[in-house]
Length: 370
Image (tube, rainbow, N blue to C red):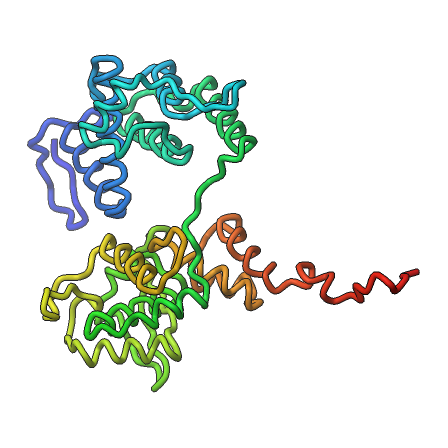
């Protein structure tokens, strides 16, 4: 069979025609490669970790492997009750995972310590399982009504019993300043100060965004302002480039780092060797998280500090200072108002008159009010 291309030259089809109703094996592999390449590295790691856990749990509980076929809904129900603790009439909490299996999961290094898992962890592992089934073209057991209802009611039960969703401590202005004050340890301090201020003042950047920034992404606007270009991020994958400003103290800290460790191209924030030699290797996201914990410890700060503390702290402080929500979201690139509002409202309430009603009224009990 001959067909023509746009040059009107005949093209001979020498390969066997494809089946229109199913994907060829090499096509399926190419599609999966696109999905993998379009997924952030941190997300890929979390998926692998969740799937490894499912595989070991299935082997121990059912003597089957994850790839043996689609899982039925009762298996997912069992996973939920195995891992979520539930309240009992005597006030204690129990989960159904047998102690010997719990210990075996820890010994296999897919579980950190014995005991129930957090609700968010279980929800994430169900979401990964659902995506796994979708990629295998299997029916999704997590969509079964029994699973959906159980997970909803389990979440409500935990909230009623005071088991809230744990959030990382927000790095508002005061703790940020305390961490910056610890950055006096030579070249490492110069780098860490620039990173903290860029990530915080530059819009509460995620650690994955910070470590992928390159010298080529910077553009000087004026003496007191840098512009940095964001490419693909967790929520923005359209390929559009967006410039964000870096001003004042953050711009000066970046100047100090670029002067201390000059580099014509490559990652902005690079690893240091033991004796302060700057390498050409970008910092990892995990290194950023460790740095924040270290600076918090040096500053004597209590709380659950992590890389996300920069993002939540920027939004909280913006709400505290009365910055309009639209301007905040333009910097952070949050797409969901609901996601950002929790932090924003917490910050705005700190400066609200509603929190100081007694202070603003005459509270002298001898004065009768009509």
